[in-house]
Length: 410
Image (cartoon, rainbow, N blue to C red):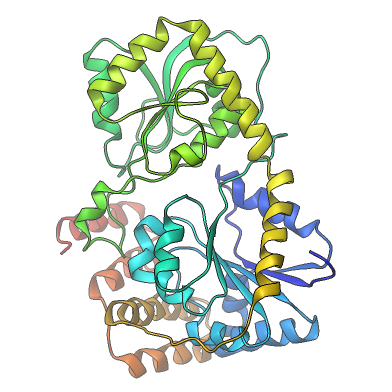
């Protein structure tokens, strides 16, 4: 971006196999005129008023032209109206993940104070555009030095799946269906026999597998989405597909709308729509090595061409610059419905607990004032916060209470 100063507001998640965030931040900070603030770190240090003042002062002192806010989908720390205030003089971008689940409860409300929303799938852009917010897709991109094809490796795993097996819709059903039909599936991840895989193990499995499965069902429930049982039907575009393709693995994926915009189905990837079709295609591709390997090769070439983060990040920044040039500031009408207010206010309880534990009583009282302002709370979430923050040091008690509260959810 030509001589523009960019501020990236983002809390990086450490010690995780979700490498996109770490790689994105690292490469982003290597870009000219880019600054980074960790919103969680700042909030913990300065509290509600102090954090907002710190961000605004930092932006003014460094002549920030563009702010990119990459949020955690369950956080409500920064105020929507604060972003709207910044938007008068700064181009604001929000990058969202898991918006399939959090659009209704969080993302659409913060989007009102943004000039552009960047999503990680092909279909959510239309939901934001429907409420008058510019939106574009930016798919998970990878550091190709971390994910790579291992040449001449023996493919001695027929079928594999690498991913969380806990609380994810349909995964156990699919795997068990294959097992009942005499197709052995090696699984890696939480809730699987082999347990979680390291990054190195993931790459090895992707390379050794004749067929890498990908399931697109989302999380069963979260504390914010538990009221939406219909979310169990939602399919998500998973970052796993980019990992498998970059490693040169053949991928057979459960279909998700928009997948055809990412890889060409039947040429670079193949899909199934139900367990019967999955079984049929697993048998077919196990018996047709040449076709399987050709699809894997074309998928790898597509990934290296279109989803290498060293190539995609400059394109994203260029696109943001084009939107900024066209911006004509107009105050946004901010609508905050009851459910958002309840979640926003309830989140203050979590912050109060954290501040009290840290001995920062002044910041805890700031959050309490917000609660008194709205006077709306979700007691289910408060119980969860209590378990996580107060009883977190007692794993057995924590486990029992989480089980009880899960059964009693409404």
